[in-house]
Image (cartoon, rainbow, N blue to C red):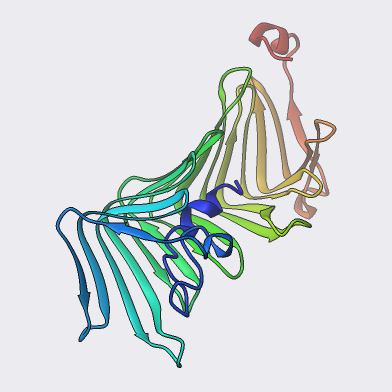
Length: 274
């Protein structure tokens, strides 16, 4: 999940002051930014705007953003040159960083807010080991290090042994924090509303889920149901420890802490379960 941060950082063509931070973040600020377009590259001084039209592309190092139109709005800085405060890419937007890509119809970056947003009919982010899609939008809050996918958000991760693991929810939010090397890595991930986790052997549903990377554990709350073939386990809250591959189900106060399970003898053998 931490790879997705690189995709949306690419909309930061220049932060304030101009070009203080490049496409790939602070580490690439000393690299040149190359902008190309099939039609025109305009500098509208009266409007304080740059516009690249028709198959436009901005590239810095191994990070790039391509669209039919790229627009940058700027203001006069305080003796520090131009300050670009808003970037916008429209039509067939593709943001790339090495083997990672993001696709949408429009991407904007509000420098003052530190907010990057991508929208479109077929929103998708891809990396070698997973794909993230959403119906409404992707948001990346640069300062907070939070990436949000809104509207039928879904993460699909192929398994080396075959099949896929899928997380689906109304909203998926990932929080990234700096490690000892100064790299932003996944700290925690939340799934909010109509959570469905599907693996080759199980389906888990609930209202809310959170994963904590430092402990490699997850918690699911709200009418939790775990289905494995015909076998069903029901409760109010489930804890999953990925280190030990163990799960615990808990009941609610309304049921006196009671949980419910229905198990069919030999069902694991019949379904090929482990």
